[in-house]
Image 1 (cartoon, helix red, strand yellow):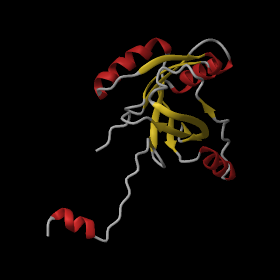
Image 2: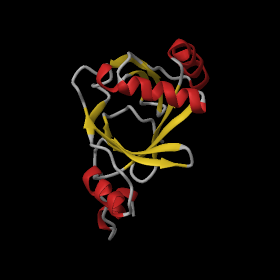
Image 3: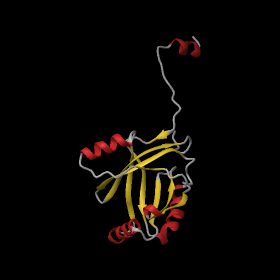
Image 4: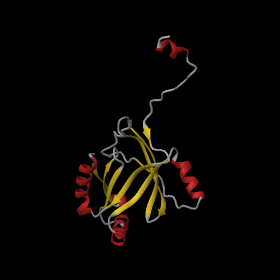
Length: 172
């Protein structure tokens, strides 16, 4: 029997969904906090090392930050920017801990449900933040929502309900 004829009779069903990529219950991206004067150097070095490209810089004065992101590699380089209370908080953290991992963001299917669950466990979950509209990578993400859960082992933990456009995350 020809293979195609057998396949038509086989009692196997399957479904192929064409959906955008989303990390669920695994690390979506890692955020490093660095001194502003070192940020470009780290972006250049990590771009070469991981053969990726970073988008940015994006300045968020309301959060006291400037950052570069490679969604393809799951890396973010974050630096204090400005002189508001948030910028001062990031500078203080750098003075206390030095440059290094600031946050690990774990992908979740539903950020509201995940945040409620974390609050029930006693974690001080932040407000949910999303797109502001001027991100240089907005064509790479279908949706973006994040919340900080709290501190664990000296690192902030975050939830990310982030849906990537087709082709951003390479898979085999």
